[in-house]
Amino acid sequence: MDRPLTQNIGPGKSPPNMAEYEANGGYRAARMALLEKRPDELLELLKESNLRGRGGAGFPTAMKWSFVPMGKEAGVNGAGDKEFGPKYLVVNADEMEPGTFKDRLLMEGDPHQLIEGIILSAYIIQAETAYIFIRGEYTLSAALLTEAIRECHQAGLLGENILHSRFNLQIHVHTSAGRYICGEETALLNSLEGKRATPRAKPPFPQVSGLWGRPTVVNNVETICNIPHIIKHGADWYKGLSACEDAGTKIFGVSGRVKNPGAWELPMGTSAREILEDYAGGMCEGYQLKGFLPGGGSTNFLIEQHLDLHMDFNTIGQAGSRMGTGTMIILDDKTCPVGMVRNLEHFFAQESCGWCTPCRDGLPWVEQILVNIEAGKGRLEDLEVLNDAVYALGPGHTFCAHAPGAMGPLESALRYFEDDFKAHIHGKCCPWA
Amino acid sequence: MEQINALSPQEIAEIEAEASHYEQKQAASIEALKIIQKHRGWVSDESLKAAADLLDMSPAQLDGVATFYTLIFRRPVGKHVIMLCDSVSCWVMGCEGIREQLQKSLGVGYGETTADGEFTLLPVTCQGACDCAPVMLVDGELERHLDEDKVKQVIAHYGEGAGKTDG
Image (cartoon, rainbow over all chains, first blue to last red; front, side, top):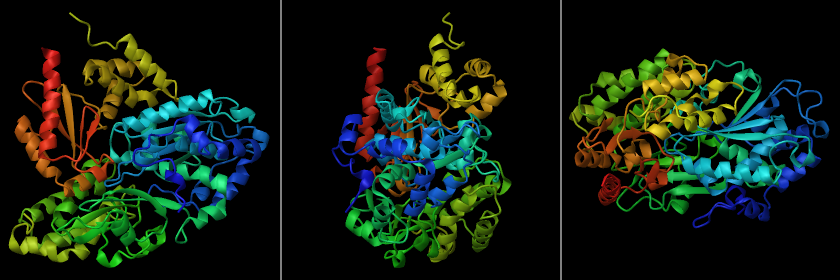
């Protein structure tokens, strides 16, 4: 099985330095592309590859990039694109989705892979400055990336006139200081400008007016890490890696009461059961599966009947959830589902930026109701209030996707675990306490 | 008395180096606050005013930034900062029990510092190490697979280290 993203990553392996990365075929895509391919040719290849963003939303990457304005002379014979002033590439390395630990793996395991992806991506949109927006706690990742950037400058792969292609690129590592909302791409741009991380209205979209009003592309770490491999091996190879209509591989993960929690690169579309049973080793002794969040804290619960579904954007979407980041969080039978949702809503209430009222005021209200129910002080009417909140804080009623994301686990828990909510209310205590 | 309020030449140099990466100086505001915190442990009003001057911002504007981001401390903290992950995977794996143990053995709640100034205890969101849950950060270092014994060891380790430097 081809595992391009993690070919250099494994237990006991230290992250390859420049020489080791190159010895394994690294920077061949960048060297070839910058000297032999035009940006528009590479964008076409990317479009054929059917790569979809790995940050959670699954938006087609080539389509996102196609909205970036390109000057008439953009990248022709290596000349830069000055027509629209500076353009920016921003890598979203603010991995903060609860239960998600895949970008850390990629950055700590193979930092040069991300740097090569950035060089290629920036070349395609003709951005001469790239920022890696990385969460403050990921100090090891930040240090490894900074060192990889230094090595690239020495090797002439970054800086002015890279490989005599006339393409220039600087990459800066920007370490953040907390707050989940920074992962929302327009909030991230405000944060990168040194402001409070409140989201911006769209349109205009960042590709047209992003960082300091300049054309800007924001993409997740895992997405960018795919680029060198697609350019090196082609679109057909990339599509062939997958077990479904979404192309490529995906870093899947499992956490919770399983025998072997971890993250693995597998064909996109691998079934949830295979990930849980074959890779995570199944449930721990004495624990049974009660439900799972397929791709992080903002995805809707699924239950045992969904285990044979393929983990890809469309299939999981049709089942009423989202594949999200692809890192599953397991709810076992000895853990209270009301408590788990209360924990999630506490997170979302705390992490609301406070910009719009439904989110700022609604989420703490939801949390408080859940606290009461868990403590045996709930009333049946509370369930109606929670269902109303699912609507009032849902898609279209808030400024950004934060509160709708928070409603995912709540809405699905109210459906699948209704009896457990009612048992708390009728029994006036938590059955799991 | 030692001059502690104005920014040191080292801090100014580090902030200006960060500011040079951006079209506008203000973009270095979060990094400026982190640089101050790295050198002083926290960000005082005086340091904040000096950094605001340096970045052509008003103190209120910079304080709005400082108070938004959770990893910026606007109050003094202990010699060691313990941040316990309270997000979903760590919760499923028992972080509530770890919190009770920490609060009992340190004698402080969240947001408080021990009377001897050794430890500050804070909650923190998902650390992206969910396969090693429950986890906590101590002075930025990740401590994985926490259980009662591991927590005892970690507290003893940091407590002793502090004792030696004091001695």
